Image (cartoon, rainbow over all chains, first blue to last red; front, top):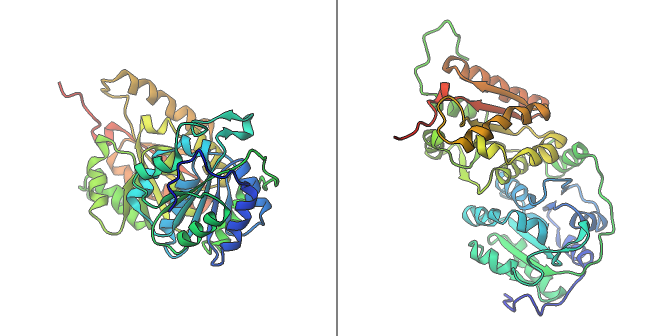
Length: 199
Length: 180
C-alpha cells in the first residue's frame, strides 16, 4: 500500500479513473456520487441503475453509502467524494471506522480546490493529507493511488470486501463532462430499483 | 394501540418509543447523544433487534438513515434541539426533495426551565424551520398520547414518503434540570 505522501503523486484524470472504476463493477455494486464534478463524471462514465447522484447535502456521500452498506451487507458500496466535500464532514470517517463495514469503499478525488465554485483552494492543496487523516480516524486501509495502475489494484482489492477502504487520488482541474438528471425522486426510485429495494 | 379509556400505560416514555419503533420495523437508530435520551439510547443498545450507534453530527446521521432507507432498512435519528439546528440543509436538499421518510426524534431543550441561554435561543428555531420546509411535526407533551402520535406518524411517513419530526417536550420526558 502506497505511503508516498501526496506531494509527489501523479496527477490523474477524474473521468478516466471513474471509467476505470465502472469497468471493475461487475456485481451490481452501489455507487453514491458526491455533488458537483464527481457526479458529472460518474454520469458521463455510464449511467447505472445502482448509481445514486446527490443533488445537494454536500459532504454526505460517505454517510449515505454507509447507510446503504449497513442495510445491504452482501452488496458492495462505493462512495465517490471530492476533497472539499470530505473536508466538510471529516467526522464521518471516524463513524465508518467504528462501524467497520466490510462492504464499503471510499474514493476521494483530490484536486486541492473547490472546483465548481471558482477553484478556491482547499486545505488539501498543500497541507492536509486526506489519507493521513483517514488513517488517523481509524481507517487502516487508506492509501494514495500513485498512478492509474495502482488505483485499479487498490480498487480491486477493496471490492473483495475485506473491510472499509479509502482510496485517494490526486486529480487534475478538468471540469466534469456530463450533467446529471435533476429529478431527485426519479434518481431515488431508479436507485432503489437498481439495488432491489423497491419493485 | 392503546385505547385512552383503558387502564393507564405505566411504561416509561422511552419504553413506549422503543416498542413503537420495533412494532414498525424501524431497526436502525443513529444518534448524537443527549442527557434526556440516555435511558432510551441505553435500552436501544441493549436490544438486539436494533442496530444502534452514534454519528459525529446530526446531518451525518440523517445521511446514514437516508442511505439505509433507500437500501430497504428503516431508520430513525435521535438528537436534541441544538442538533436539529444543524439540519436545514440536509432536510431541504436531500430528505425533502428525494421524498425520504426520515424519522427525527428531537429532545426539546431551551424551554420549561432551561438554564442555558444558548439552548433557549436555538429552541426558537426548530418549529419555524420545520414549518418553512412543510415537514410534518408533532410536539409530544402527554404520555397518554405518545404511542398514538409516534405510531400513526411513522406509518404516515412511510405511506407518504415524507419525513416527520417528533419534538419530545420536557412535559413528557422530565427534561434536563439545572444541577444547582
